[in-house]
Image 1 (cartoon, rainbow, N blue to C red):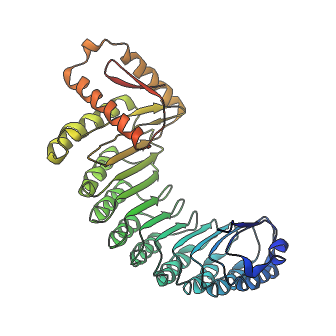
Image 2 (image 1 turned 135 degrees about the vertical axis):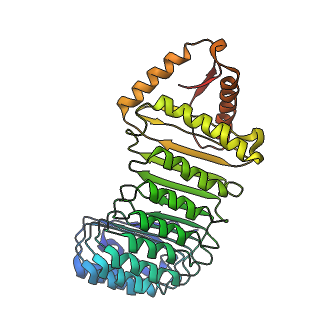
Length: 395
């Protein structure tokens, strides 16, 4: 098997044995190759007739929408491509740039794995819609990542993306990063409804940090995704204030997925206003989940497991529910100051004797420890721990 050929200068790639390449990395970072450079690159790629895997990275180049269109036309002629990674960062391509690239990608019928980065490239609403229109032509895709960080994507564009991304008959794994955009409650709800219609998707990751939706939109997203019967792994990343009651509602909605779901991860940042008394919230959530949900979902029986950990410099409140191979993980991040405060509070509580713990608390913490050991087995977290007085503690 031939190793990947790596090029960090355009000239080196142009002067290489083009027809011999099957797997190449081209890293043009801060090169300012301009329109002539991208044209030369495109012509060279056409000559790579045996190319199966291509990874190409652009950072702050100045070839514009016209240059991206040239690249798209070249990719259309790389008929043997199975793996493609293209990264644009701060190239100010706009929607016309996306259109030019997508016109070529639509011809890449043999693609299996596709990763596309448009970060800080101002693709806007029209660009996101163009992606949704063109990409479904790649019917053989099984793995796809779209990183659309900071591109002015709004509700309509999010809805269009969600609907379009459900039209891949073989797509198993999808990661969609919409961090720092303009998606509100309507957009996130409709996007979830579209994604839930996928008949093949088993692994879904949504990066939704720093958008405009509220707790209501998050709940609606959970309601939509709960209708998906094929998902085995779901990860949602959120970096904004979420009302505690709406957060719990999201979990309850997603319980419809439990029978098929093997891993659910929800990462929530900027949680200070909700957990100003985090130690109280922790116990509230623990017993709410342990008592109420265990009773309402009898198939968990004694398999229900929940645990939490404190780790500097942030608080990570982690709950695991294990039913056969099911792992349920929630991470709540707060500031270092709050972390120290809660850590001291927990240390004080741990000085109490075991006799002061009621029977239910001891049983609960024992289950927590077993869950933690199970989590280590699944390699979810790697951290030293010890068990004392019925309470899981972290070194």
